[in-house]
Image 1 (cartoon, rainbow, N blue to C red):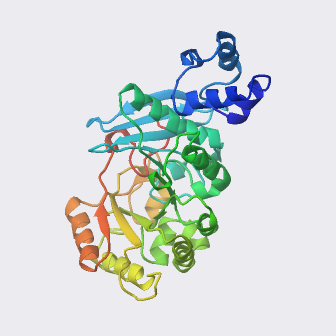
Image 2: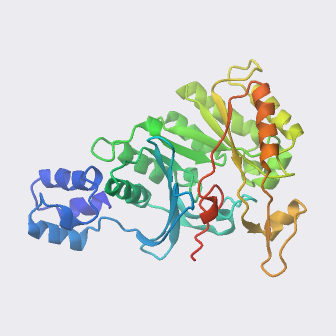
Image 3: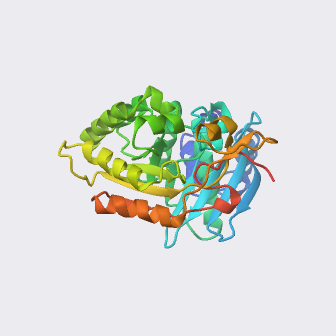
Length: 364
């Protein structure tokens, strides 16, 4: 729901009506103005006609075989489509992974979303509406949404202002009242965005998609590294830590034969120790590595060919291989033995193309 539209529709009403209506949406989590029983009937009809609760139209929803992941394909008002994913963790944590762009311009070699190119940036209300969709769903089940991550389609720092406006509304006590430590932004390494976030009063969590410990490999996997190589990236990260004293998460997809060897694990440990913010050359608790199983997905043939991988002559697409569990465990052990804070992240939704790097608006 666009708050400006709500304010316009209620311009002739008493001032308290805007507060009342927004609370019904963000705190009451109504899915239709007909549910707003505290509002007069004529006002409900007006809002129903002029202020849709959501501008997103769910096109398709898929649930994983384990039942812990749900992916929804949404159609936007201009016909563009995006995806968002709900992950139900053991315990009481429910996380929604939302998109910040329709498509993505970053063209990371291993990512299905990157094959789409950029369609457009999302408006702040379109980002928030993805969260509200799942908050309502969980409420109907007697549950609550606890965490929000901007790790879906798109590069959040290429849509910085709208992303931060959306997070501010989620954080606002009059909005969804999410604590900043329950919201995370993931970037592929847009240095100006990292520096802007360092000066932003919103102290949300920051995650960096790293995926390689040297410039040669990272540039082949992630073209953004040509503009912001590792030295520039870590200078920005250290500035961010100096100004915020917040931990930084490093996301690292493990692709067999590409970035999962013991030698590369040692090189990654060397990088993180060398770039310790305090300059000591020792492991730092302010860096944490999340190792992630690569979820095999179709990528551009040109990307596959860069790594000597086969390309399907019919589709022109290739597939990167996922690192086997024993190699992932060995990689993790090397980092652990070097004193690096590291975890192996649980996989969600691989069977419905909802895991990291798999979002590409595929309808069944």
